[in-house]
Amino acid sequence: MWRSLASNMLTVLAVALFLLGGVILWGQSQYTSDGPLEAAICLRVERGSNITRVSEKLEEEGAVSSAPIFRIGAKYADKTSQLKAGSYLVQPGTSMEGITDQITRGGASTCGTEVVYRVGVTRVLAEVRELDPATNRFVERAEFQPGVDETPVDYTRVRGEGDTRYRIALAEGVTSWQVVEALNALDVLDGAAGDLPAEGTLAPDSYEVRPGTPRAEVLADMVTRQQERVAAAWATRAPDAAVTTPEEMLILASIIEKETGVASERRQVASVFTNRLNRGMRLQTDPTVIYGVTEGKGVLGRGLRQSELRRATPWNTYVIEGLPPTPIANPGLASLEAAVNPDTTDFIFFVADGTGGHAFAETLAEHNANVAKWREIEAQRQNN
Image 1 (tube, rainbow, N blue to C red):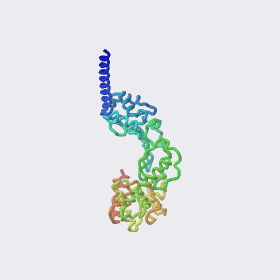
Image 2: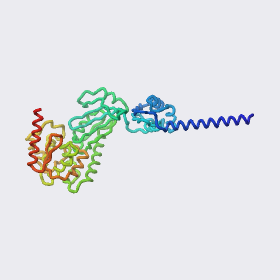
Image 3: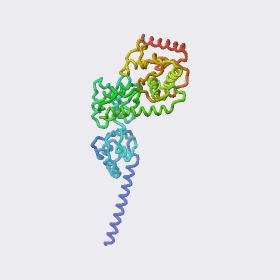
Image 4: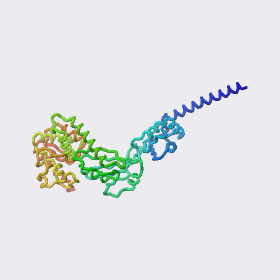
């Protein structure tokens, strides 16, 4: 009898082990195979949350088929204690294993709310945006000028949320003074900006920041990035470039940046200045005169006067020979590259053409005709 009982118990144990093995294999398959999610979602993991709450939220959202299996899989992978707060864009069909990796790997949030501070030539604009998971596009929630407009409720709300991302977008052509003034107006940053960076030494680009980031740290990052760009652009210079040093390249690039906002024109504009420098002609460019008036501190806000065009300043290229002593703004990478790799042309003149671009000319007669056309366009606009 005892032998029979032992045999039966062994049989039952074997069946149980077999079934347990099947359950484990099934659970592993559920954890690693494609998930049931049909449309992308933005999963927000709050600070202080735990794997149980997250798993239940995922099951409610239809991202996982079983919250317990998700928890068991995360525990088996030894990741339950590695949960990172943030907002995560979970794509359709993402497996439980893939979601676990997303929410424990950390790094920048991939969805949710973003505040972008756009530092432009004429103003600083703060935008509160939220990513729509369905379209993978940002939806604007609020927009205002820091220090000028009343602070929107949406901005105050997201500033109190731990997973909000912050980014400073620096436009090409801003001056160092404008950048420092803008950073001083942003409540997301902390500390003093320090000494005013030299003109041209800040890289127009996008910079991720966090609440409390020191202003001096942001400026140092901008300087480092511009140094890298200057070095990279200088390494690609054409043998017949008119500039002879990286510093001269930076000065010429800043003039190109202020003369045109049309990307396709940069090398043409660069060719005009290159031809003038090579022929010993004065550059005669209005943005340098404006810089001599403002020294980069704000926008002139009006046309140049004849007296200003004649006034001798270190930057007035209607008066001085060659390049001014310093850049007149912070140029972007494309303008740096154009300064040392201009188009090959015989152009020595250009004027606005009414479309946002310019009309180029090789002779004074052609240029005068282009100027006459531009004045007609201006007159028509004033009469409308």
